[in-house]
Image 1 (spheres, rainbow, N blue to C red):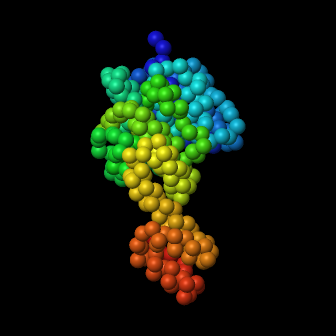
Image 2 (tube, rainbow, N blue to C red):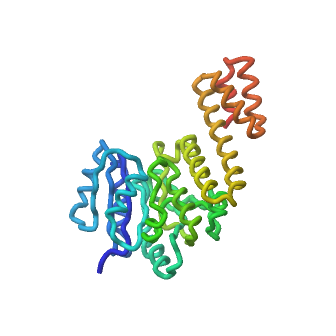
Length: 306
């Protein structure tokens, strides 16, 4: 019997944790899978760790020059030949029944394009605790409008039909962040249906160097996603404009905080002015006023922004 799903794992300098991710795949209650890992130009021994699992014929390693996560995922998908694709980042992990539950849901309903789930958040030890759904909205139904409005957040570890991945053209390699958000929106916009399983079937690792920790960069790429969505779906222009304004405020506020922390007062005032033009923020306005009168107090005022 062939594999049911190809697990797509991009890896860049993931040596400290990729072994944990691979072991979580090998511990699945379903064994009809293949794991395709793309070493995206790592220089820390990531490939050596993956090769230590070479005795398992279901695990394949592809190495390429650094091109970013979306290109790495597309490269892995191009090597896959299964009806389903499952996304797992190299710093995350799955519960043993992830594939059984998620692929099972897709097999049971041919109308589903993708299936997502809840996840536990962790840093080092995988101990059940805080769930993604405690921090972001994960209440069904999963619709284009709700996902676009952030009324439902799709956690990154998702399984989907290969036919839908090919239908929308895979990941946008120009998006070095928010590429998964973009993919789910394009599938939903094209009529794909999705299901959410209200169970923590995965583990989402928060690390200081993770993409999500750089919020300014994340917001900037998410702005591009909304530009694409507004162009493709004119009926969502108003929603996209509202979300875009919110993101532009967050970008300006983040840049103002960074500039103030660095003592770059001219840049701080410029970014603060941009943020205040988009949204009222008494703390930011007060910080800008104090910093203008007495730059020496700026670092104390910085605390007001947090």
